[in-house]
Structures are given as C-alpha cells and as structure tokens.
Amino acid sequence: MFTINTIRTLRVIAGTLTGLVLVVAPCTADVVGSDEQIIMKSRKLDGPRMGVSVLGTKPINVDGKTIGPVLSQFGWQFEWLIRPENGGPAFVTEIIPFVGGVEYSVVVPSLSLVTGIRFPQGFEFGMGPHLSVRFNSEADKTVNPSLVMAVGHTFDFSGVNIPLNLAMTNSSSGQSYSFVFGYAIPSLSRK
Image 1: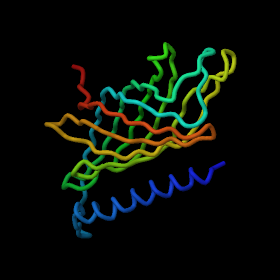
Image 2: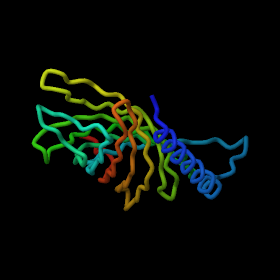
Image 3: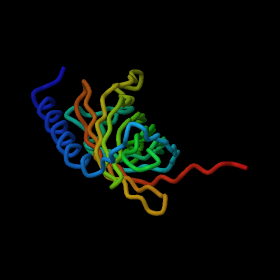
Image 4: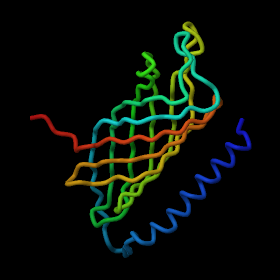
C-alpha cells in the first residue's frame, strides 16, 4: 500500500513532470498540416550506465550481510529511439540491467524497462516496470517488482549520447532514489 509520504512524493514528481512538459512542449512543437506525411527515423543506441542508489527504509540482507543505504549501480543500456524526420520529440524505450552492491562484496541484480519522451533540447522523462532481487536470507531470494520513474537530460555530442538521470522506484519494500549516468553510441553493424 502507498503511504502518505509516497503519495506526496508521487504528486510532486507528477506535478514537476507535467509542468516541465507544459513549458518545454510548446517550445519544441512543429505544426504539421493534415496533408503532410510524417516520416519516422529509428535509431538503436547501447552503452554503459553507472551510478548510486539510496535505499528506502527497509535494509537489504544479502547472504547474511545487511547492506545500504547507499548502493553502487553498474549496468548496460539498450535503447531504441524513434523520432520524426522533420524534428520534434523522440519516443524512447530503454532496457537497463544493473548489478549493485559490489562495494559490499555482494551482487544485487535488477532490471528496468523505461518508456518515455526525449525532447530535441535533451530533456527527457519516462517510467516503467523495475524488477530487483531481494535477499531475505540465503535460501529466500525473491523478485521484487516496482515502478520506476525517471527524469533527466541527455547531451548529444556528435551522435554520442551522454545521459544524466534521476530515478525513483516505489515498491512494497520502500522507495529508492538513484542517480545514473553513462554514454550510448549507435549500434555498430557487423559485416
């Protein structure tokens, strides 16, 4: 169940995202006539992601060790992007597997699927399902589903994307907040 603090946090995030969309969208919108054909371009980008997560109120127990509240995150981003050829926002889907907790000599795996929008200036937001493995004891390893919401900015340097994102996950075991960054380059075709 959601607590009062969780509901307040979700309201603040939703209000912030709505406000940013209302401010940014009119600045980037192109008027398209009904007779104009829209041509979409797709692009696949991959690259490493790393960062830190601050865990919620419940500690994580891995192989008898209590870890947290700060946890390292290392992963790989698989990104698919679709954008109108004439300009406008891009529609982005990302799959990011992470391994956390290496500084505690443990492995805490997780997986995020984030779908969102990236505006031409680089502002982006998205949300989706997040799965992490919670270790209650050596014999009790459970998959913990949650919702991830992310907001950030991607800088484009000659086709190389450098994302900086803040994310919040919310589940029955509590909330966690993450800052992740990395880079993504177009997938190279094999000949």
